[in-house]
Length: 182
Image 1: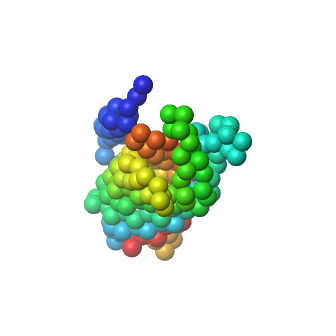
Image 2 (image 1 turned 120 degrees about the horizontal axis):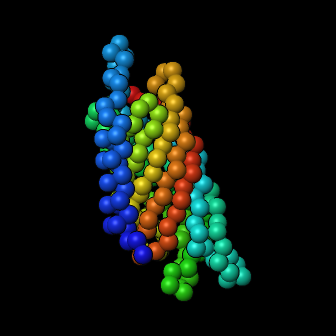
């Protein structure tokens, strides 16, 4: 069975391989100022495969959630950020035959970002998921973001992210975001 550290090692290896394969991206337009900061608001859905319904049966739930991300670009290709997701529904999941409850969990992760070409960004990092009166869970976050720059420093993007909760459930998050660079 793959453990989170194995998945992270595999992901970093793939990131390096893709970076070497793609080489340097073309320089940005010299007439445009380099915008280092970006804040994004996302409408997302969090998919949890090990949830339990009211009759005690395992099910696969799609939970409504919101995302708020801040990124600081160190160079046009590399950045760091603080990414958060808030699931706005309560749910129960099964962990080693024990049913546990999560009350509107908030996941926060410090991430590194690498942009490939004009649209694709890869995200990797770690953090924690918090839930009222419940255990705090450590997590590893991996994802991709495909964005389009719009006039006035706006950006529209689609993202797919997976959170590997250490010794708990995993979640897959799909989202659409509107961001502002400054």
